[in-house]
Amino acid sequence: MKPDARNPNLDQLDTDFLYHLGLDTSMDLEGMFGDVKYVCMGGSSVRAEDFANKAAADLGFEVPEGGAQPIGKTERCSLFKVGPVISVSHGMGMPSMLIFLHELAKLLDYAGAQDVKFIRIGTSGGVGVEPGTVVVAEEGLNGKLEPAFEQVELGETHTYPTGLDRQLAEEILEARGEIRAQLGKTMGTDDFYEGQGRLDGALKPRYTEADKMAFLKRAHEAGVRNIEMESTAFAAFCLRAGIPAAVVCTTLLNRLQGDQVTSTPEQLAQFSDNAQRLVLQYIRGQLEKAAA
Ligand code: R2B
Ligand code: URA
Image: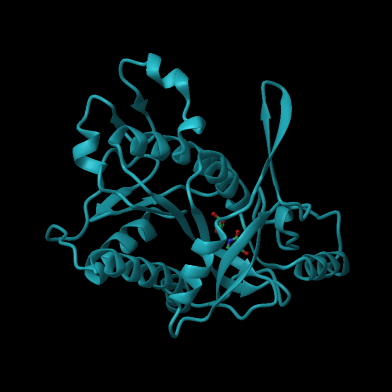
């Protein structure tokens, strides 16, 4: 975190309880997390565990028999550490993820971890891209196609920019090898159904199929290649904190062709693996470069 972004109020706390992580500053956070360089976050706890075990195998780090074990409490998220990589789940949507971003940024600050990058590895709906394609975000756009994240603080709306680290995005893309991946803008919304213009929610929508297609085409023309539920808050938080950040999402469907996710569990696992592998290929390259 850049020093001028750090909250000076934290100096008044005897112990800071990182409540949702189940960790606090009476613990040896430096010993536990001081060497972290990459925080890889995704919605699901199953995928966080899966990524931790893949990271161990791919990057050559040991895990206990039975696989990587969670650290802290697992009520709200699952956090694993493998070498310099934290793999952690953040739930669905910006409110849940923001809680973890605050607690993870504090955790790493208390631990004295240096030069840490945050990477969200997620799922999304593609816009004009083949399912399974990984989109590395150039920036986050909100549901109005603006590069902005709005937050109400003390009764007033504040707007934060949603740019992402261009160099990091390009380096991740360069690691793609055989994986189908591309740059694109990622739209972040507060809902999976009407917030993403779907016509298959529970309630009668205010819009028609023609309205939906016109919006998705407008989004595509604005550079949007996928839609998910966290990118704008993630980008805005990391930009404020001075943490280099990337959003790397696989696409589960092409929204220009429908709303339902109809792929088989095997296909979905492969799509998810594409984004995880891409990030692992990038991290492996960086660790090899640092060791050379
Ligand atoms: C992608 O997938 C989830 C919704 O299915 C949400 O967390 C997101 O951004
Ligand atoms: N996640 C989303 O938020 N939207 C999709 O269409 C698929 C996954």
